[in-house]
Length: 107
Image 1 (cartoon, rainbow, N blue to C red):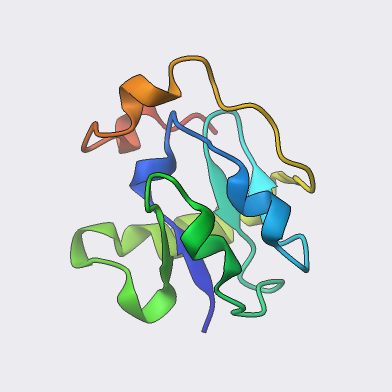
Image 2: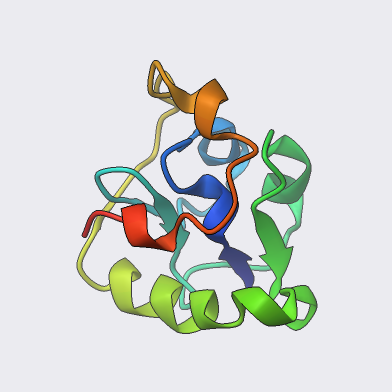
């Protein structure tokens, strides 16, 4: 099983999760993070660190977010690893509770 970053991360892109990942499985896009399923060791450390509760175990991804399993795998192949925490976007707090953000995903 792997972990999956879901829609809540879009436009928030808090990187608290990156700091605790022992295998550097996070990949960074312009306004979203993904987990490389081939690198994730299922340690669960990132789940508690995400301030927007965007990370789920693969088997626990909500039904409406199932497409993010494939999206994480796809984007992990093309985005570069992120291995250090960065500041969140200045407007991340405004996006924290916004639903249906997939249309804002920048590839």
